[in-house]
Length: 443
Ligand code: NAP
Image (tube, rainbow, N blue to C red; front, top):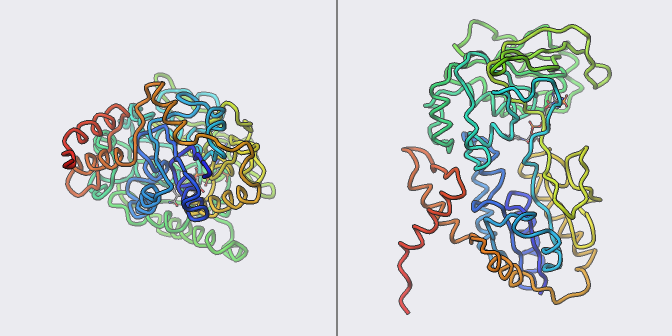
């Protein structure tokens, strides 16, 4: 029997478990260990609450979790409750699938002013991640600035722009829906340090801005390159640029909330007093593909700032970490003998949920060609259980999660899929209450 530990129950972790279960079947035991009692990582805490169709993939992960070789072990923090060194002693291989949950600071003056947030914190807030549920952004001002030209910037701008009614069917948490319902924001400026041809937003997501109830997108036609230059773009980006052109053409009085793209505009400082008031911006031009400052500066009003400029993984004692790149040092997923990484922990924060699938398959292939580490007879899950018990850790099983899940579904407001618990304590309490209610099977 091979013993495999996967750290992180997000997409990268589940695709790895699926591939390993398929390859070794009943010759492997796979433990997916997560710090939270709730599985699914980015699907639950990162994907926008109004993008429910993307979240449907969690059903596939649930099937993996229920498959015989696989076990979910929630509420166990690797690095705090158990160490990586202990896992490497217990399991034949350990795969780090911990994602990139931290904001990458821009390093600009004023970044620590109140009401300046990184997207990990802000998205975590509206998605009810326990680490960010208490964020309390102030949406009482008129001007929001979103920094970045990727899909996360789009998610944040769209969430800020939507009416409460447009969240029907979304699993946005109540505290965020209440705050957004009372929001006074009427201008959302998206700052992009490069131009239309360097946009990282994808067409489907960009197109959603055309269908918002009270908000419309605007692009300054002067920022657009000659139309014939679009022919050289790859098809996806060409479609995105075509949408930016449409936003520029349809630039009229529009709806009451304006989502304005400010391109060739790099933030250089955040200004304010008791909270942020303005973003100081430098006009840029392209040198090759790179944005360089022109020296021309201006200020954009900003009562709220969300920087959506990328994420970093969390370092873990015992695993070499590239602090510059914000991910584990690895060669094609290999970190050290018996230690691997997948997903954003391996590649950095790029690609879609589906990009993690070949990643999981690749690491399993690697494990096969490397061979399981010698010095067998490791104790695997039995050893983990002994450690967890000895330390009084309240580990959560997949059945426990299903109880928490049922309680969230039962608490949903009408039309919503669930009302998430936003603290670990509340999740554990729901699990215990429902466990007590479940009748024991007859002897
Ligand atoms: P991203 O696509 O890499 O975009 C990051 C943006 O931040 C880029 O526009 C980048 O500009 C800008 N940026 C970086 N450093 C900056 C700086 N110092 N100053 C100003 N701007 C800066 O990352 P993301 O939006 O965080 O998304 C992460 C991944 O998740 C992406 O692969 C994304 O497609 C995916 N995602 C997908 C969906 C979806 O499919 N619905 C939703 C959310 C996220 P430069 O290009 O100039 O570096």
